[in-house]
Image (cartoon, rainbow, N blue to C red; front, side, top):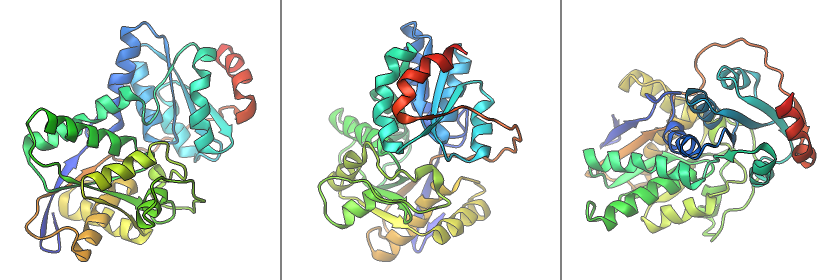
Length: 315
């Protein structure tokens, strides 16, 4: 593909088991649970990671607990539920749910594999290995939500440098949706840390994380590699999604299409030039299959979740 006079290469992550890059991290995380006789795994997610952990757990005979926000769309519940996890809708701030989940491991007798868990990062960093093995780009553009994947790609690139397989790290350009862009906001204001924002609705629901747990690390990854963090409009995302389908034959979810929208903006601003090799990471297909199951998981307030969890799991 092209953006202006620049050639773009696509790193297509849609071919994984559940159609997203999350399967890289789930394979390592759930695999570690299998090796260590941990019978139950869990995650906090409202989309791809929930489906990925649930599917990988099912494939390895592990029980699975998925904590989702109370306002999750019904179709996403259906996609997650087909793999048989215990789903719990939790009322409360999503960022707080992430922090509290690790306190639940003992009560559920299991392991939470969240977005920036070291096991997940270890799996997801392999995308950097594969990119550099095939091509050495000047820049990599990828969506950012929790910051876990940006952290993983940065870790993979640094390891390649340490091992002597890479002379200069590609710049990491991270892209968010304008309606929920805490990392881009911090980058633009030259802040040293990423704070919580009040989100608005966006079609890029999968990356709409108003309080990213690894946001500051992702911010540092962009700065240390000479990259940037930008935000794009929903209309730009729609146009990019359509271009990817019509010109590259790839149908991706809106969150993935932010990479093309971001690259076009970066070319226009001169941050990416015509002589550079640029890789766009297309992180997933999204929830495309039509599943009509009416899933009604229990809804629990965050402050009583530790007390209710054992009861829910035993029912």
